[in-house]
Length: 328
Image 1 (cartoon, one colour):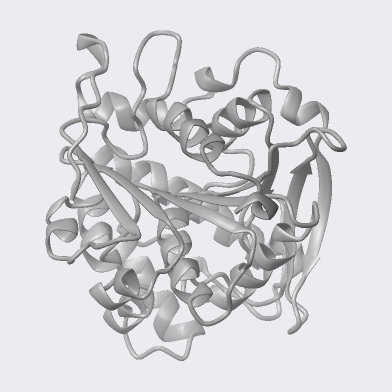
Image 2 (cartoon, one colour):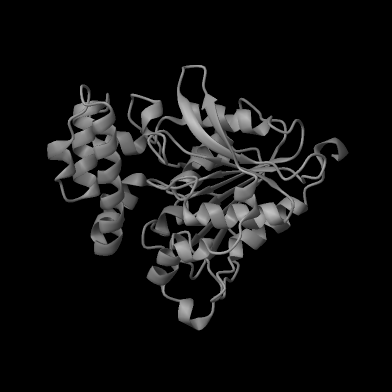
């Protein structure tokens, strides 16, 4: 485990301020050249699943590589932290690929089936396709919260199904134990309200699109993320309980030990969503590197009033340090 200090301005020390600013639209003000170059893409998997993505090529023969960004639960490719990180990476010479999971962003109509975080194969296939979009250029994967969880599980899959040009994985505030994370969300009134509002809108839209298959009326009225999860699992999945579902995408010691791609995991002791004790329970070893900061909140790490972000700078330093694949 590696301890590195994240030192925000004194008025940004609060974990809830950091967590709020992570998703604040204030981070997206001003020009974003990544969006000017964005092309919408529909990724199709072998099983017929369709996922909506956005690809911003830096420029032919100029790009340092491609960075794929994975958002958190009920976020999207247009979440503030994704747009901010994407802009910073693009301005520093990287093409950016932003993925929406099913039922995230404006993609509810693309698949009749519901989103479950255990559906890793379709996300892995999207990563495979994104890695080939600019040939053999260096490819990087960065995930946030649930996206950080996905990134670590994809790293594990790569041990058996390698993506040759995947050079580094960055996992920020990853969900380690989804059961504990759900409990932490439900205990925090503001965070619970935020996620419930987004989830209810998502379920209402899915029901409107597929009225013959879904009726979420009594589910949407429930007042906790855990109770909604339990009811959805019972009514629309093959899992016996929410606990069984959560175990299906929890990060374990085996997950970390089997990763062979260089991986950097970043979290904070004051994260109000992901208990830091989850990280101490895992035996981290090379090539996975764990950085635990004293502050940062959940997916925050904002340094100052200009919304400079510690992990954005760290990613560019890491990625710039990777030689082109043909030079290694």
